[in-house]
Image (tube, rainbow, N blue to C red; front, side, top):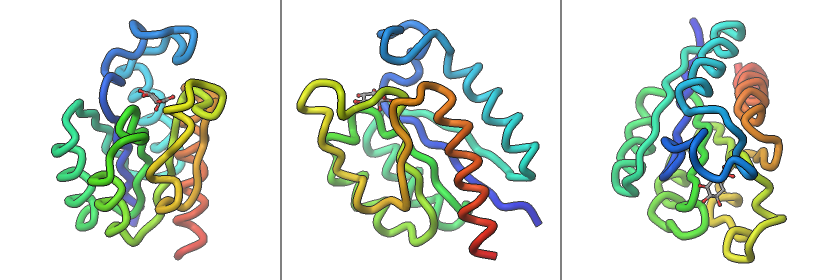
Length: 148
Ligand code: DQA
């Protein structure tokens, strides 16, 4: 049976390809989703890919993931730096979580250098561009393989 994973994208990531290309590159969210779907299939993972600009919706998605998914990959975007609610929801998910950022948040403005979720996740990937999503899928595959 294949493992099920969810990739959760936070606010403004729907504008990838249009916003701050110097930080995020030119790939669109749709193309990113296609790349992630392809890699997941190769690794026999079932993938759900989603995005929301709404904090409460993200909390609901994370809560629901407890029932339906074996692992979460999350780019919480700006909520990484502000949302205790997202952090608390992630803490309840007792399975592997990977924190992901396209840019190197530690090389940017001071307010981005603090993540409220880093200490409730299994591990993180940052600063490696859109390819970080592919690396996160491979890492999640390894984490889940070691569990079984
Ligand atoms: C981001 C970094 C965040 O600081 C920012 O608010 C984003 C994207 C990244 O992927 O590099 O929206 O999470």
